[in-house]
Image (tube, rainbow, N blue to C red; front, side):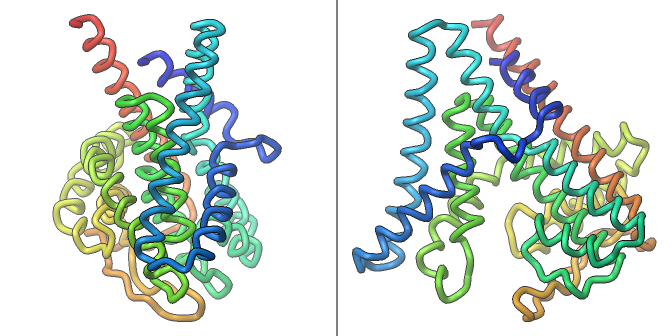
Length: 315
C-alpha cells in the first residue's frame, strides 16, 4: 500500500485533473443530484431524507470502488494494484489546487483584477466581484489552507487505512457537504447530516495538520513558532471544528492574519480574525501558501509510507 500511496501522490503532482477526464467525483456529484431529486419526491421528513441520501451515496461509492478493484485484481493482481492506485490518485487535488491558486496570483501580478476575482470565484463560495487585492489574497490563502486538509491530507489518511474504497467514500462525504451541506432554506434540514458527517470525517486529518503544517513552515524557512502559537491561540475561533486549524497554521507560518468579513449572496458574514502576525498581505503570499500545502502533504506521504512499510515488516 505504501508504494501505491506514493505513486498516487506523484501521479497527482504530474497530471492533476485534466478537464476532459471522467473524474469519479463528477459521477459522485451526478449521483447526488439524481438521488436528491428522487428522494425529495418521496415527501419524507427532510432530515430523515438527508440521512438516507448521504448513507446511500457513501455506501454505493465504497462498494462500487471495491468491486471494480476486486474484479480487476481477479484478472491480474497487478491490474488490481494499478486500479487501486489510480482511484487514490483521483481523490487528491494537489495539482489542481496549486494550478487554480497560481492562476489568481498571475492575474494579480498582471494587474488584471476583474479576471483575478472571476478566477477566484471558481475555488471559493463567497462573493468576489468587489474584492480588492488584499482580500483576494486572503480568500485564496484561506481556500488553500482549508483544502490542504479536505483535498489532500484527509483522502491520503483514509487511503492509508482502507485504500481507494475508503478514500473515495471520504470524497463522497466531502462532495455531499459541498453540494447540500448548507444552512440556507433549501438545505438546512436535508444537508444537516452530510455537514455533520463531513466535520466528523475531517476531525483526525485536521489535527494531523497540527504536526505537518508547522514542520513544513520550518522546512520552507517560515515561522514554525508562530505557526504553532497561532494554532494554539486561534484554531478554535472558526465556526467549523476543523477549518480553523489549518488556517491558523498557515496564518502563523506566513505572519499574516486571516478571517474577517465575507459576503455570501450579498449578505455579510463575520469570521473571527486568525493569526498573530499583522503584516500586509501581498500576492506572493499565495505562492508561499501553495508551497506550504505541497510540503505538508509530502510530509504526510513520507510519514505514512514509513508507517505502512514498518507495519508490513513486523506483521
